[in-house]
Length: 565
Image: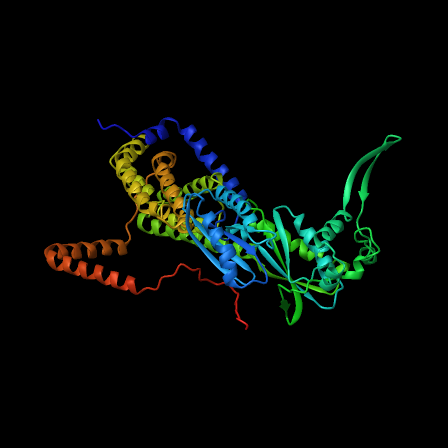
C-alpha cells in the first residue's frame, strides 16, 4: 500500500489544529498588513562607498592635489576592503570617492575613514579646520518638500521658519530631521580689518577664544528654599551688538569695534536661491526615521501644515505649498498594485469557474490566494521589510501562481471521489498521490526566482530585486503547504459532489488541440524547424528591445539644469 504524505494525514487526523493554524495565519496576516510600514521604494540599502570632503579655499587645483589629494589617498589605501579611490581637486577643496568591497561593514569602514583623517590632518595645510566624511544611504532622501513663498520682506525669515515650522515638524512622531534651504540665516558677523589687526599686533586666535569664552550659558546647580527647588544658571551671553563692539582686547583700551565691523546680517555667500511663482521662496525638507511609516509621517506633516502652521499669525505673508509628498506617491502606487492584484484574483476565480464549472471546487482553490499572500506578508513584516513597489510586485506576480498546486490537488481529490472513495479517504489519498510532483514543480519554480535574490556582484540590484524575489518564493512555498494541508481539509468540509456540464467552447478547444497535436506528431521534423525559427526570432526581438536601469514612470516633475559661466 502506498504511504500517505505527512501533511494530508495531519489535515485529516488533526482538523481542529489545522483550522487553528489557518485562523492564526488570517489574524496575524491581517494585523501585519495593517501595521507594516508603507514606502515607495525599499529603504535600508547602504551603498558600499564613502565620500570625504576637505575644504581648502584660495588654492589652485594643482596645489590641492599635491598637498591634500596625494597624502590622503596614500593613507586611505591602508584601509581594508578599499577597491577604488577617486579624487577631485578643486579651487575650494578636495573631494574623495572611496568604493569598498560588497561585503564590507560600512559602519566599520566609516570609523576607519575618520581614524585615518584624524591621523593625516596634522600633515595637511594648517588652514584646514575640519574634514567631512560622509555615508550614502537611501534614507538620505526627504519624504516631503514644502515651498514657502515670501509674499513680503521679512527681517528674519529663517528665525521665524526655524521657530514656528522646523521645530513644530521635528516634534512629529517619525520625523528625524528638518532642513531649511534658501533661507537667509542671520548671525552676528565680525569682519576684521587686516591692516588694523597688523598695526595693533592683535592675535586673532586669542580674539576668537575671548569671544567664545564670554558667550556661554552654564547650569550651576540649584538652591532649595522652603521646600522649593530653584535651578541656577550662569549666563554670560552677549545681549547686544554694542556689547560685542566694546569688547576689550588684551586688557587695553583697544576695543573690538576699533579693528572690526560688527553687524547682525546674513552671510555674503548665498548657497541656495529658491523661487516659487516668481517670488523669493524657502524650501523645507523633512526626513523621516528609518523605521517610520512613510504614509503616516507624510499625513501628519500635511495635517500639521494645514491646521497649525498655515494659521500661525507670525507667519502671515508666507504661502506654503507642498512640492513633494512621498506619502501620496506611496498610497497611489500601493493602491494601484492592490487594485491590480484584486482584479487578478477575481479574474482567476472566474477563469477557474469557467473551466471547472463547480462553485465549491473553485472557492476551495481560490482559498490558496489569500492564505498564501497573508503568509507572505507575515514573513515580510517579521524580517523587518516594508510594503513597497518591489514587494507588491512580487505579491502580484505570485497571485496567479499560488493556485497551481491547489488545482492539481483538488482535481485529483474529486477524481477519487467520482471513483467512490469517501471524502476523508479521497482527501488523504488524492493529496498524497500528487504531493511529490507538485513539490518538485514548486521547488523548480523557486529555483527560477532565486537569481532575483542573488544577482551577482551588484549590491544595489541584489538589494532591490530580493525585495521582489523573496515574496514570490515565500508565496510559492506557502501555496504548497496550503495545497497539502488546508485544501484536503476544505474538501472534506465541503464534500458535496457536483456533476458539471462541460462548456462547448472547452470541448471544441480540446478537439482543436487534439487535431493539431496529431498533425505535429505526423510532421515532427517540420514542427521542430518551426519551433527553432520561433525561438531564434524571439531572441532577435529581445535584443532590439531597449533596456535601462533607470526608473521611468508617471512622475509629474520636470527638472531643468543650467550651467552658468
